[in-house]
Length: 192
Image 1 (tube, rainbow, N blue to C red):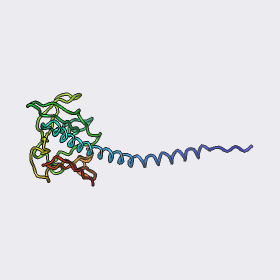
Image 2 (cartoon, helix red, strand yellow):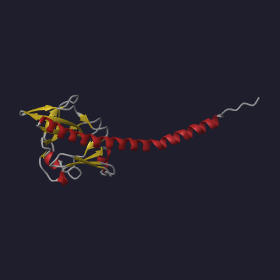
Image 3 (cartoon, one colour):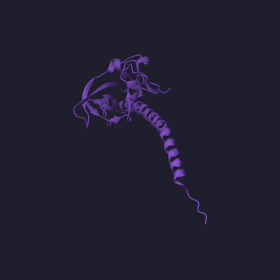
Image 4 (spheres, rainbow, N blue to C red):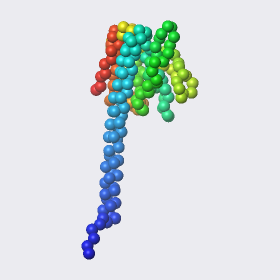
């Protein structure tokens, strides 16, 4: 009787080829996940600005868009979350939950990539659930008419959303720009 089976050498070669293919695909998969997180982060920033405009119009009050600095595990404190606060009757109240950006994605705070920070950097601090101590935040306001405060030129009204690992390297090959129209509060997204 003639039996057909794998030899140990054939099995070892097959496993080696599978390991080699898996090790070559991990960097591509990591890049693909970073791209997806970056797109999601840019969409989150744009949607929060859009939501602020809608709430301001519906409630006839100013709405603060707060960009909140949060620490991450083994990394620096960066702008990693957003939250909307309504200004009604001289009082502030949160109208949305804290909206964190995807893991590894931040809003660049350098003035070259996000010139809006020249006017809104480090407004104040606020308590954030789960954090020890208060977290710094930067803020801009959207009025019921859609105007954005503080007023500035269109060419300065944008944020750049980047992968955090790009900050240390100094290069930004992949990013999302979220620009805000100062008179209407509408947002535009640019992606290279």
